[in-house]
Image 1 (spheres, rainbow, N blue to C red):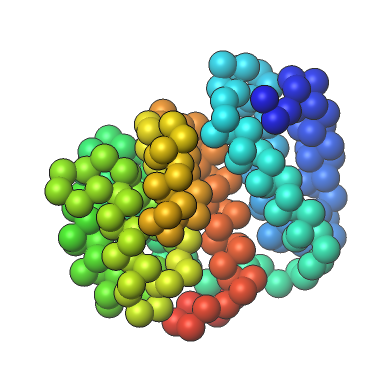
Image 2: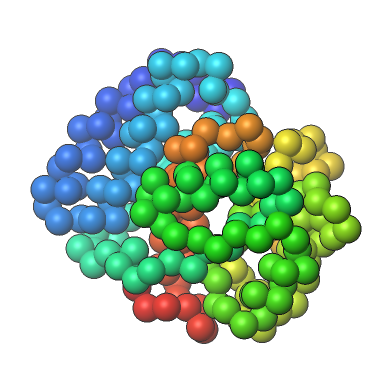
Length: 214
């Protein structure tokens, strides 16, 4: 594992103390990111069976990103403008779960059940983040990601795979297709929330053509 159990608890207590301090001094993004990570760490500490490669990768990614936000130290909120997030999954329950996790962070999204519909929407809308299933009828998530990369304005749009496939070959294919990250099914709502905040804030820290202003 990337983190021993005791390290998770120590990280939780440190992030817990940090969350309130960041809010008091007006660092909104830092406070929001820390608050979400705090909940994830608490969940992993209280329910050890939730500890797996996916959740530990998310924790490591979030800790690194918190350090980056701390170095920036800007009181301006990266999330002030509404987010453009697309969810692609042929399973209705999975789409609803992802949507619910995003709403927990006050992030709205558009959800569709077919990759072809997703591509049509993305050709017209500057989406900032995409969550997609891998195993779907017809075009799979890897194929969708490859086509997304060819669309004007979406060469660097973050694409996160939400999948039960966590073997080495699947991870390799996710990278080769242009994917940025993955999260394992079944996922914790708060883990997906943390993923969304990281990728959305990162993108807005490096504005791309067509992105809404931070």
